Length: 450
Image (cartoon, rainbow, N blue to C red; front, side, top):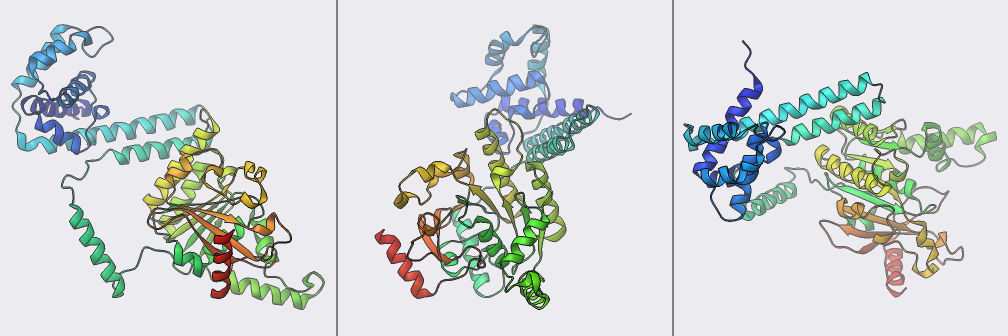
């Protein structure tokens, strides 16, 4: 006969509650392992655990009298116990249970495993119900992913927390191994000298690149992905452009001469295009449009191709799950993308459109700032790095140095900010490139004096 999983879960729940009743220290240990009220299956056990947590916070140890008095209001047809006999029976079982303190961790592990299974089964049932009701595949996949993430999070947390000294020693050992060539650094070079000298993109980072139209967001992303692809495979999720549009754009920036009526010029231009892109391991997804599709695409690329980075062009075009407001939708997407970058251990670059209110400011005050991020302050909170692109020439055709693109480093979790890097960019004439060191110094001096 197959054992009832709920009966097994209830037995472990009673065991840990019995231990907590005898030793309040078990409550602290169980909480440190990740046990919470949501992990209990039995309604009465959930009520008992909540009360014990309340006792501990008040500095009191739970006992039978306190429990009986507190939960007398939890008796009734729709409440945790149908009558006082049922409640008293539960309390008596806890007080008389023969449980050993040494097994506390095992009881918690069993409760969490049962909770994890319930979450997985519930998600599967929800997915089947959605499929029967004809809900869109995107929503079905999104629900499946949500259940998978929630089930994966229901695990025992690390018990023996490291000391700060141990963490520091690990960092020192890793740095020494990198310096000896025995380990790879997790910093991914972006291929632009001044930017790499001031900003460090690390695997696991979620980096926003914000700008108004015509500042070069897409070309900036293509430029850095071209360099990052030297470190490993890369995925580009292009929501803004289809395959042909993207191909036309990369062709236009390397094509030379009157190629449309000159086969020799077209062939030479083709060789230039392929010399830049032909051998780079950059996969392109132009089909995924929704948040769930893009997250799935990145997960598949990480598992199948071992990508080190991904780029999304761009956030505001992404179809997001419906929520109470657009701001909440963007906040949810931001949290999921940040978690995805960490989970997949990749650098995730996400292009972001800035508020048009920026252009209502005087021309000399149009450099982007944090408040210009559209629709959600959550973006600022979640991102490990925020880069703002600004070209003076976009607003002032008579700019003295129209080739200079400012990359404002507004946030850098592991480095100095704010600060500004300078690169060369002329729309219609190629991608981002390094300025000379002299040009960088001059641009920096002019920026500080402006």
